Image 1 (spheres, rainbow, N blue to C red):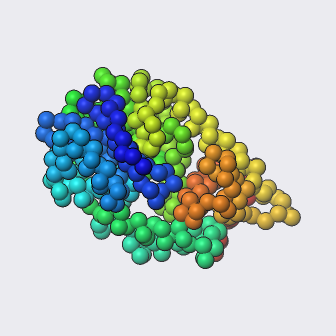
Image 2 (spheres, helix red, strand yellow):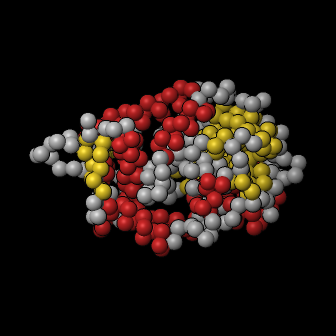
Length: 339
C-alpha cells in the first residue's frame, strides 16, 4: 500500500503505516513537530516495511529517525510499540508509557516459553483443542516484531504532556490494554483515542489468562471517561480520523450489551438436564464475528484466540451480574446460564 501522511492540524500528522501480516492492514502513527526534534506517538511493529514507512514520513518533514526527541506510546501492544526500542537506540529519544503496561515491555517479564505454555494451558482449559494451538505459536513469532525494552518514564493519569505546540492531558483508559491511554488537547479539541475508540471496529477486549482481571468492566467504565469530551476530531490507532465521539462511544457500549445478549441466548440453563455446559470455545461457534459476517470456524487461529478471550471477558461480566455460572474443572472451564 501507499504510505500516505495526512496533516490533521498544523504541527500534527497522521502516518498510515502498513502492517501487512495483520488483518487490520495498517496502524496509525502520529508525528508531531517540535523544536527539539520530531515526536512520535506510537511506532508500529518492527518490520522493514513499517520502518521504511515512518522514515519516509520523517523525510517529508526534512528529518530522520536519529532526530526523534520523544516517543510516546499509547499502549504496549506489538503493532503500537514494536519499533520503540529500535528508534530509541537510533535517536536517544526517551520512551514514555503508562506503568500498567510496563510488564508487557519489560525484558524480565515479556513473553517467553513459560508464559506461552501458561497461555496454551489457559486456552486448552477454555476448550480449544490441543492440536489447534496455532494462536499461541503466532504469539511466539511476534517476538521478533516486538523486542522488549524498559521505558524511560511513566505516563500518569491526568498529567499534562507538552508535545510541540500541543498540551495533551493523559487519560488512562484500561480495557483494551491495562496501560491504554488517550491524549486530549483541550485547546485544539483533538483526542488521540488510539485503540480505545476505533471508527469501524470494536477494540479487542479479552481475558488471556487467569490473572487478567476484569477488562470488559474496565473498558466500559473507560468509555464513559471520554464520551463527553468536546473533541472536534478523534485520532484512532486504526482507521481514518473521525468526528462524533459520543455517538461512537454509545455504539461501542451498545455493541457489548448486544454481545452479552447473544451469549445469554447461547448458554444452556443451569437446570437443563438434557444439555451440556459449554466452554468458551464451544460458545464461540454460536456467535458471529467481524461485524456479524464471519463464522468462528472461518477465522484464522490467531483471530480465534482473540475471539475466545473476548467471549471469556463477556462471560465474566455475566457471572458478576448473576446471570452465568462456571464449573472450573481441572481439564475444562464450562459455563451455564444462571437465574
